[in-house]
Image 1: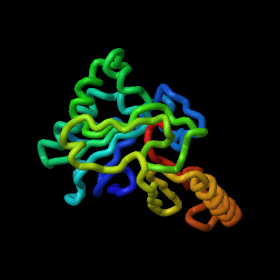
Image 2: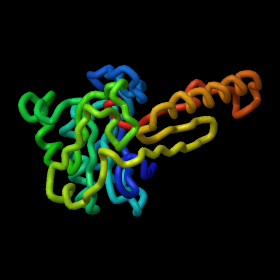
Image 3: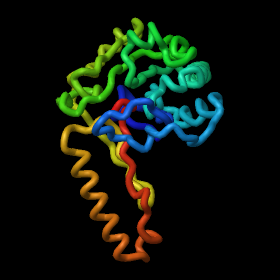
Image 4: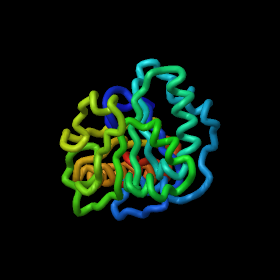
Length: 218
C-alpha cells in the first residue's frame, strides 16, 4: 500500500520481521519477535513495491532492517533498475555502530543504497511529537547529495498518520503524535467489544482487528 505518512511523496513501505531491541512503548510490537513471517525473493518484492506507478520512494522499517540488510540492498537494486526512487530507512542502531561493528556483512551494502537514515532507539520520555524521528535522541542522517538537495524537514515537521480499513482490520501507518495511539486503541477495543457481542457482525470478532505500524525503532 502507498502512503505519504512515512517520508516525502507517495512511498511503498516495507516492514521486516525481527528486532533485537525491545523499546518501551514500541508501536509495532508484532514485528519484534524473530520468527518466520512471509518469505519473498528480493526481485519479487521489488515488483510488488512498485505496483503503483505513482510511487516515488521506498521506506524501510520493521522490525529492524539492518538484520536483513543484504536482502534489502538487493531488493532496492532491483527496484532502482526499474524506477528512480528515494530510500528512507529507520534503524535502532547508531550510524557509528553500523560502520564500526555492523550486525551482519550486508549493512555496508544497504547503507550505500539509503538516502536518508533515521537512527537510534525510541525513548518514550523524549517523544516531542515532531518529525519522522520518534524521539529527540534519534538523528536524521542525509547520506548523500541527493538527500541534501531534497531539503526535507524530517526533524521538526508536523507528524501525520493514515488509517487504512480492510474489512474488520484497521491499519495505522505513520509516526503518531503523543496520545493518538491511546485514542486509536480505545476506539478499536470498543469496536472489538461490539463485534464480540454480535457474532454475526463482520463474521464475528477477529483478534487482528487492528494493527499499529510506523517506524522500526518504536
